[in-house]
Image 1 (cartoon, rainbow, N blue to C red):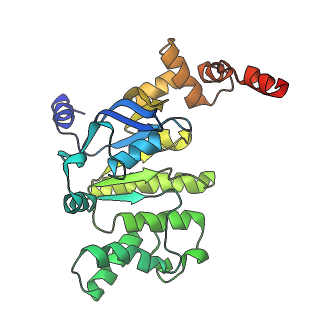
Image 2 (tube, rainbow, N blue to C red):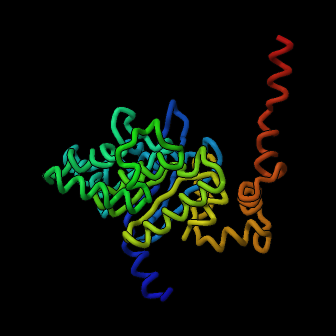
Length: 286
């Protein structure tokens, strides 16, 4: 990619996270996190359970407000917006939740139509056409009249994605899109995400700990660990660390263990150093 385009992207991030801090019960779940998401890219945010990635996502969609630092979408600081202004920003992005989050009392088509009925002045016939278009994009048009209970887990993810793109968003946020899916269905969802990104020109932000999926879809990757950002870089950089061709420092070794899923390494050693065994033995002796 030409350097001048790279420079243009760097100067105009669609999402900007600056020195973000979030505490729960006095504990910093996010501790000075910085991240830019650039136009047209698929950014994968990863890390182990409890690392803060879901909390970061909730800040990006405005569900949480920072204790310190800022989150900007489209150049607007979310903390400075009132409810009406925040709603206007939210109409510019879509979210695929981990479960699909379909309303069980509505058909697939009615689920997809909901954002159009709530946020537009379109008539019923036009909404029906739009629903069919969105379902066709995810390969589900023939399931339009089925209930969520009548479709598979992978189809529910597709239906949730059709609803997420109903308002033609500029950003798509994905929360563990491969969770609970078999490997083939997971690969199909990944390919669908890539295809939609290309066809619709949307920015994609994907939170996941599924490494096969992450390396299939990412343009750039970001890894969180214990509330801090360890590394942000192109997929190739993470591939090189995973494969052992670069990096022999503590951070690289920690990232490598996570990417490979190795049973031994810095993450394991850190857990063993917490004094767990001593704590159990002391409790047993009390």
